[in-house]
Image 1 (cartoon, protein in one colour):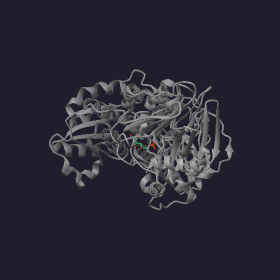
Image 2: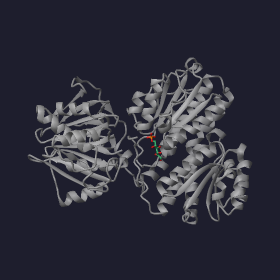
Image 3: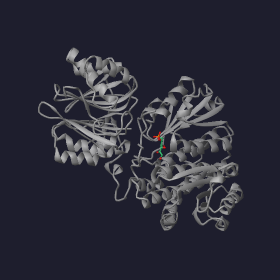
Image 4: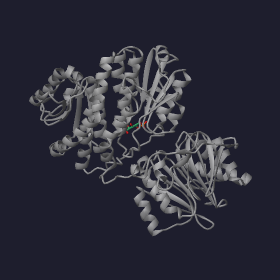
Length: 612
Ligand code: F6R
């Protein structure tokens, strides 16, 4: 959370920083600010609200200079306010700092610094960093050394950008557990939390590692470890282009990303089957018969939407491979002393590859000797770097806070991993594999089909449901899991209270909540469970609920009990979740649109949750 950008070069830094911050708003958008090195001083402008507010402030109170740092915030310490917005600066205004992360020992440092006479103006943890750097700088007159010593004192996570009036040709960056890259241009260089911020200028970057620092000048970048030793790093060239970070005519990134799903699924499938289509190739991951026979359980760990993708994996692996699979949200897993050892395969799933809880879960799993397979979208992210093996989900940038295409890519990864393990362990025969492969090949065009047909239907009936205050998603088996994702999407962007329930569980309590006109979304794509779920739908109908059903073509008897039905094309039972989720995404999107919500930047949320 929080986005950082920095510039050193010959252009005016302000437009570069503002456009960078705008592309990073998915990381947080409750306040924003910039610090620019002017003649002999640092010009700081910061304000509560989105980057647009900052842009307006800068129109009235301009600053200009060729070096600057910027920040868009997702509040952790201290409410969103002008004063708590970054950059923060030393008492003599000579040093300015932007920070993403959490300084865990900030109170102790603050007490110490106050005793030394430093005054604090904000409620943030970051202000301690500005004063601490200033303190060490006054001791030795060496900025890099002052930053390095500061890092040795602070506990927690950080991505930092530092400006100092005594160093008018450079900025310093550092990171630990919060992402930061150093973008490499011609006669200009950058720092950024993520590549979209600087994609207009360069695709080349150094990906900073944990506890590493960078001194960035317009024509030179030097990297150091925490001890101050200079280190070498290969340049990483991002393959994404500028359009990937733009809306391309769509009203929202979320809608654009929903419509990118046929391509994302196709990309994931086309790269993962052997030439003859008879086996799966997982980016060279060594999970062959020998390794798999050594594993007696699988543990899947992730957060939010990624966790639901993981649950789909759990259902499939258990049913097809017949291996015990546990699944936990990372924030629980990391503190429960999980039962894992060197015979456990831990699968961590993350779009951003930076989610703090998931990353800590990964480290815990490794410390217990488990082998960790990361299913990650962001190349070079912390989770991708620290996992033993990585399967990239090839979804491209996902900018909308609500995850759509990344989820679909994660679900495809679950299909591929399940099939691969099943094949290696002899749990699936050639005929069944071929049948599933054939069904998978149809998925991209089937998603297209849903997008074309369901969208009209959903737009047509959204008005009917827009007044709903409580929504229930019900289903059995894989349909229950996909309902969890549908329900989360509706909560996140339409701010509607919604809960997923196992359809058979309703009668044990939740059915008491059903009253006249309560909206129930019934997911009934699992044909083996169709009659059972249909009965549960009848039960809610009898109590006055309005029912929107998602069913597979050919099961039109659902129309007897549902008010509206969206059909997905026929597919293999293990693949229905991917298709059933598409109408759920569209439903959440059009409900949020109808309610006038800020779809790409829902309140209180940020895309990449790099704090606990
Ligand atoms: C929901 C959503 C979140 C993320 C979760 C994990 O739409 O996007 O629930 O899925 O924060 O994020 P990653 O996958 O980046 O670890």
